[in-house]
Image: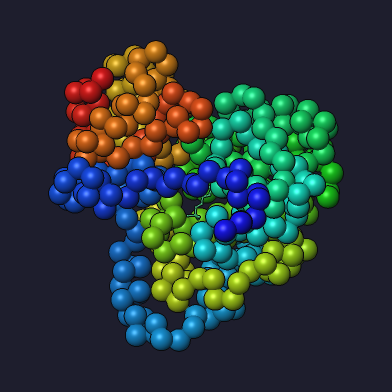
Length: 364
Ligand SMILES: *Cc1c(COP(=O)(O)O)cnc(C)c1O
């Protein structure tokens, strides 16, 4: 069968290995497996969410409320924006897809960091757009600007904190950069980990309301999959000028969020204390990762979020290391697919991290 030729250039996205796969491949018992591979919240979600969701399971026969008014209302209050400036997606992944389809075609260019979230490229390739990348590992806005002048891209992706490196852009620098970009170029600011950087370093924190008030061409992305602990519910959102939101809405399939997911996200959004406590624990545990890297003399990129990236350099091959850990029931992320000899490790609970350090000492 012949398929859309653009598919030939696309490598299937490899999500963090699911626990079920390790059970099957290595015969390890499910409760012995630790997954530190997908930047999920190791403490789960607010206990209030389970309560609320279990109360509405009887509503599954009906289609969800397609106006999504409860969650939209919650997001509009949380971010201090209008409901007409919000769109909700099946993960912020879906909003990335809408943004690219709304703005780009096969004559377009899409500018992004050398190493960044893989879905930007995958969706850009769907429409046959050309991918332009900077050279430096961490976001360098001077390089972005030079490439913007040279290529006049339709869309620029800024991921801050960046996945998979954990670096974050200084907010004043980001504002100064967007200031220089023409209003017809869409600047996507992916804030999937913004809750974390707000705690770690306020000079790198961004407010969606301020961004979209100052810039009609910025699309801010957020998600419930990371700090809110709802990866399995698939809820993300975009915040932008009404003009952008209206365009994205044309691409949205009806009922793209389930009834249970909408309820879970609404309730999770209200429990700010839970999220704050998880983030505090995250950064406490991060200090142990920093100490471990120092002890082992491995380079660690300074992280502003819930994962750390070890650059292995001459020390060991990242694919081999990831495999050795996998056989012992520890799932982490090998970054060789990004052209790096590095591994990305999601910061887990204290006991999960103990196990990670112990296994690393065995295999290094
Ligand atoms: C996890 C992640 C997302 C999207 O997550 P969803 O689960 O689709 O909401 C988007 N951007 C980055 C950088 C991420 O790490």
